[in-house]
Image (cartoon, rainbow, N blue to C red; front, top):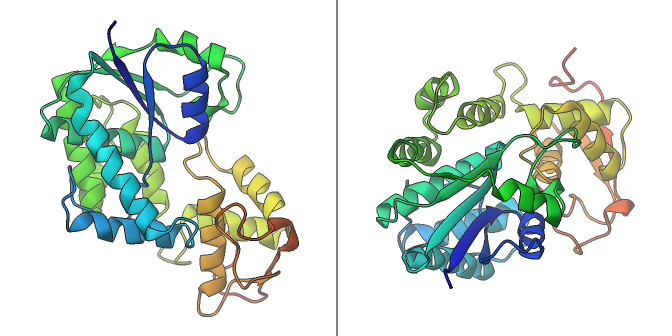
Amino acid sequence: MKKNLHITSGDVAGAKLAKSGVPGEVFVWRDILYDGPRKPGLPDDDTLPIRARFLEDVTGGGLNWQYVLDTLIAQYAKLAAAEHYDHVVLWFDACLFDQSMLCHVLTCMRCLRTEWGALICIDSFPGIEPFHGLGQLSPEQMVSVYDRRRSLTKDQFLFAERVDRAFARQDQDDFKELSNLTEAPLPMVPAAIKRWLEEQPDKETGLGRLEQLALEAISAGCESPADIFSSVSDRDTPPQFWGDITLWSKINLLADRKPPLVRIEGPGERLPQWEGLTDLKLFRIYPVKNNPAGPAQ
């Protein structure tokens, strides 16, 4: 019996894929490849601990350094073992989070001389609006998507290497070129990079788009984390690359600015970025009046 390895992003999508009946092993890749310190392609023993520290910090300590390091080591080992599978199928969304991850995984596969496999990458599904990703699909819908897989090409591997290098180096010039491509070998990459450029600090306010949307929601009267999340999600352009951990981090950054742009009231001074640390329902967030970087008009 042939062995299949399915690599995807997100525990929700991974769990549904595992329940779908599509034959093979499901492996969920975990990292935030559009940001943070790293080298292009395969990491080494020196860079992995630094990467683990970044991921611990970006989750507000919700994931401890050793756990993250062990996870990173395990997933690169899994990718190195891909040569022992008959088929490797990559399942990724069109969002910034997934496209940067896809390019990194393809680059690592090329480094490991595993330049083969199939790709499933979708930005829509009938009856689901707005569509953010595979995690919205039922296991039965996952099965129907499986027929959309297409064999990976050499041009896609080479293009992914360029994109991964741009993210690792945060190369703004290459980002601008990539975002303007009209016929990219991985066609959903340009829009994803364009969204990342919107996260770079604005020259006037110093805020990225997600911070700006959060500040506008708070200034408009949204006080609870749930209401802020709903408002920002409604106003952001799909596909949504961020989740609650990222949004709470952005709100905490607004509170940490000098002078602060928002005030957080609750059991702690900052929003917990990991489920179970503190009850989010106990927190309220308020705008700081007369801030110089208020909501855009």
